[in-house]
Length: 262
Image (cartoon, rainbow, N blue to C red; front, side):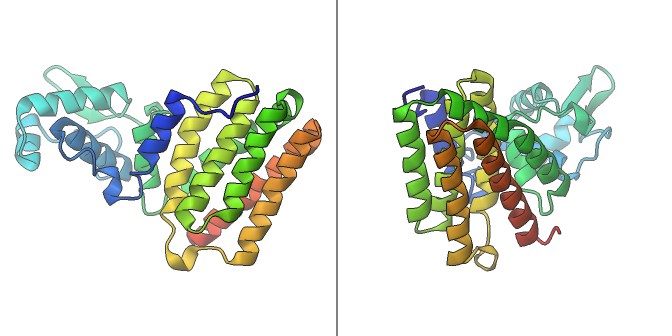
C-alpha cells in the first residue's frame, strides 16, 4: 500500500468535481445536446418536478422544450433508463421509476441530489453509509499502510490545514478520505470512495459565506483528522476507527447545522 492513491480514475474524478461548483456543473455539458438534456431531465426528476411513477412529456413536447432533435431526446432517455430513473414501454410511454430503483452510485444521480435545496434524506443516507464504511476502512489502513502511504496521508492533512479557501479545504478533505479508502487495500472501498466523496465535495464547496466555519472550528476539524493520521501511523486500528467516527459525526452535524436541517 505504498503509493499515494493517485490513479487515472481518481484524476478523472478530481477534474469532474472542479466543475460542480460552477453553473450546476454544466460548463462542459452545454456543447453536447444529449448530455444537456440528460442533465436537465435528470435534475427535474430528482427534484420531483416529474414525480415518481408519473409519465414524462412525450417526445415531441420534449423536442420543443429543449429545441433538439428526436434522436437527441431518445438518446437522453436511454441514458436515464440506464441510470434507473426512467422506464419505457411501447404504446404506453416513459414514466419515472420509484426512487428506490435509482442508481445511487451513478455520479450524475449523486450530483443531482446534492443540487437540491434541502437534500435532507439524501444527506442522512449518505452519512449513514459513510459511518458504516469509513471507520472500518480507517482500521484496515492502520493495519496495512506503509511509510509512504502514511506520508501521503499526513501530507493531505497538511493541505487541509493550509487551505486558504473553502474550495481548497473541501478538496483537501476529499483527498484525505480517498487516501484512507485507498490505504484500506480494498478495491470496492476505493471505488465507493470516489463516488461518495465527489458528492460530498459538491455540498461543501457550495456553502455560502455565512455558512463557513471560523478559524477555531477549522482548527478543530484539522485536529480530528490528525488523530486519524496518528492512529494509522501507530498501527492502532481501534483508535483509527474511533477517530474516523468522530470526524464523520462532526462533519455530519456541522453540515446539517449549516444548512438549517437540525
